[in-house]
Image (tube, rainbow, N blue to C red; front, side, top):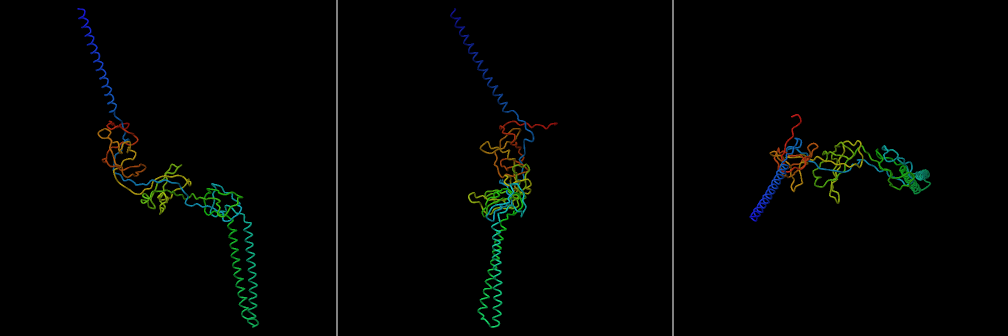
Length: 377
């Protein structure tokens, strides 16, 4: 009897253990299902978007543009060079000083050049005296020939001497002009008005012929020098408008294509273009500028470029359809400007599609979207 009781007790304990195990398994499964349901609830949690967070894909007239960048250059610049050899004197201008066209900026020691002028003048005066002597001899011989005292050969000789003296005098006068030109070259004048950008020599320095002394820039007219590819340059025409952003300035600067180089640059195969700046007030040579040139108009279904996402193999936009986020793959086309916004033409969307703007960030496909109501509604 005692053994039977022990068997039943063991069986009861086994049944109880199995029941406890089953209860624990059921409890764990219920917890897992609850966690899964909670996770799904989080995935399907609605995202609130304002009306400003979405734009409609619409047909738009886009301004076709070409991006450009480069440095500003003065249209008129000049290097004042020494035209005579000697000691540089009187150079007081420094970088930033203003000069006027024709202003004397420096001199070269003219002692030697003044002596050359005097020497040439003395030789010219001597040649003039020889003319007077030859003229008197000719006049005397002519009178003697008329009276029959000498032959005509002597008269011809005196005439030749007179012609030679006159030629020598003309050569001496030309030498005087050359000497005076050399003296004038000792004075260095500014060929244009503007501002000194570089001082390349110092007073007292002995300068050689064509030695650079100062550089002058005229900041009243500036232009942008930029390089485009040969293919892009085909779209350009003189007179096309451009908008530039120049470093150090907040306001956009208007410009126009002034010149297009007819040849490509060796090595780069690029084409240099030059844009005239409408208002150069406060600008400086060498400032970096970037912007775009309007080359034409194009129409098509367009969205903001920032709304096109590229974190997948194919570009796509996030749209709202049936209150949920839908990812739509798109094919991008031409870009253009609509005011200050950059738009891109796309294929793969329908006109009027609600596109989420790029500033919202990435959203999971299927996310529920709720629109927030404006305050006061």
